[in-house]
Picture 1 (cartoon, one colour):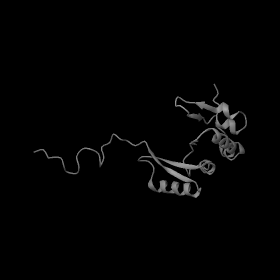
Picture 2 (cartoon, one colour):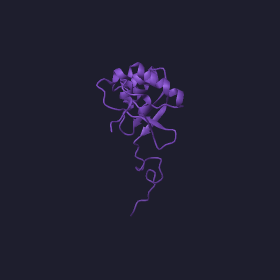
Picture 3 (cartoon, rainbow, N blue to C red):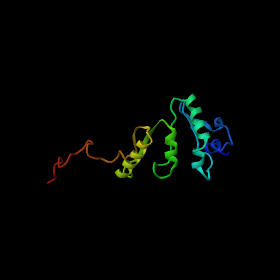
Picture 4 (tube, helix red, strand yellow):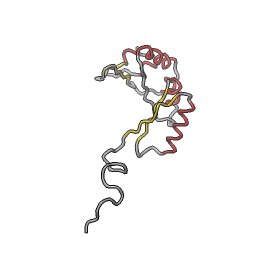
Length: 143
């Protein structure tokens, strides 16, 4: 089966309702990416993208748009201009502080509010400062 998604709707080959997928979470729907577009930037700048968001706002309280990383390609900036707010997602131990700062500045330049930061891929199994266990030289040395 060919997956119908965002690309097909934005290019005008299918209706939005055909790309809306139900999930096993109540009241949560997903629109998949669809086929690879030779020019995704043009699709995101099209009237169809704005129309899609306007239509979805009539039926849903929240619309979450997953974008490529800020600053990597222009697509994220185009999408952010059409959304109400953003959430910055960062990978623990991978994203450098200066890159986060640059992304934050880019988000602020949109004039839209940033709702917060999500730290993902955090290894919670590693015992670190502040966890239960020994602190400094608290352990008794074996003789």
